[in-house]
Image (cartoon, rainbow, N blue to C red; front, side, top):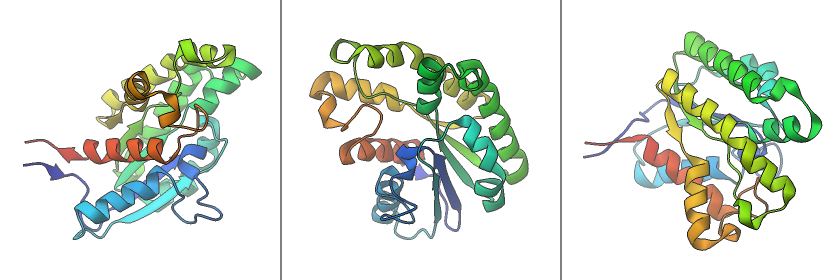
Length: 216
């Protein structure tokens, strides 16, 4: 028998960049039209007895440094029971192509660790960490894409280490995407390697759903 870790009356905050945002500040307010909204729908479908509060705090273009600047207002003050974070692809791009050392893998890992420690200390929340991803394979992308695919594992490893450190639910988004792409092609998941289409968002939402269901 599998048991959903999300409980009645709990509050779930999602924070991240454009992949989380998905129009939540405009046409698709307040949840966006991506994985946050799909996950919410999965909970309604599979556990309609639960009354859960959802907050989408994604902002397009954000890096770990941007999350720092709004962490108090957009996370701590909401006092989540569960906090889901997806951040890193913009950090990788800015480090590679703009020379931004403040978002280099080492800085990213230290800043991310500090934010998670603060969240746990001040809210007592449980964590869902979604690894950054790039839905492409080296053989089928351009030079920019190949550079991203070679650098992104440093950011992914940082997230894996943090998930272990903080006993978080880890969503292996990049790995899942690569497995699907190897069988179905990248166009199944996205319009561009950074931004999933509805299928890609569905894959992320389902992975979160699975991660919150404890086994026997």
